Amino acid sequence: MELKKNPKADLNKKSGLFFVIGLVLVLILVWRALELRSYPKDDLPVQIVTVVDNLEEIVPSTETLKLPPPPAPPAAPEIIEIVENVAEIEETVIQSTEINQETVVEEAPLKVEDVVVVEEEEEDVEVPFAVIENVPVFPGCTGRNNDVLKACFQKKIQEHIQKHFTYPDVAVELGIEGRVYVQFIIDNTGDIIQIKTRGPDKLLEIEANRIIAALPQMRPGKQRGRSVKVSYIIPITFRLQ
Image (cartoon, rainbow, N blue to C red):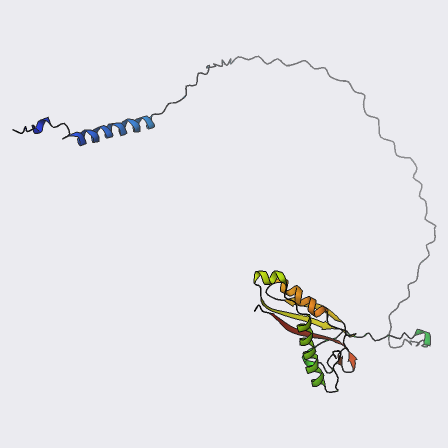
C-alpha cells in the first residue's frame, strides 16, 4: 500500500514566499545601512570674552619741541640798475629762390665726359619647346628645317632614355611602377639645367632625374636670332613585365 503525504506537511510549498520576504528584509537593512550617516563631534573648548564698558583711556604725555624760527628771506636791493642792450645783431638776408616769367635760365654746356653710356642688359628669356623659332639641336641631328630638327630631337631623346634606362632594384622588389613627368631647361649655352620630376614614387623620380642629367650638351635654341633658354617636358614610363 502506497503512503500519501499530507499537503500541509509539505515544507517546500511556501519556500518561494519565505525567500521573497527574506530578500526584502535584507534589502531594507542594506538600504538603511547605506543611508546611515554619522557626524564628527567637535570637542572644542568654548571661550567666553568679557567686555568691560568703563575703560579709562591713558593719554601719553608729550613734550613740545622748541625749534628756532626760519631765516628771513633776502631783502630786495634798494637801487635797481637798468642795463641797456647795446649789442648789434646782424640780420641775415634770405634770397628768394622762386622763379617767375622774367627769370633767365642759363643752359650749361654739355661735355663729352658727362655722357654715360648705358649698356643694354640681355633679358633672360625662357621659351617652350613647342613655340621656339629654332629648336635646340641634338648632337647628330642635321637639317635646316625646324620641323625636321624637332622630330630628330625627340627621336634622339627617346633613344637616349632607352639606352640609359635602368629599373631600380628596390622598385622591382616592391612592385612599384608608373609614369614620371620630367621637366628640364636647355640653357643658352646648350647645357641641361633645372631638372624637375613628378611621379608616383621617389625611387622612380631619382632614376628619371639621372637619365635626363646624362643628356649631352646641345646647340642652344634661338628666338629672334638670339640664344635663349628652352623648356621641355617628357614622360618616362616605368612598367614591370
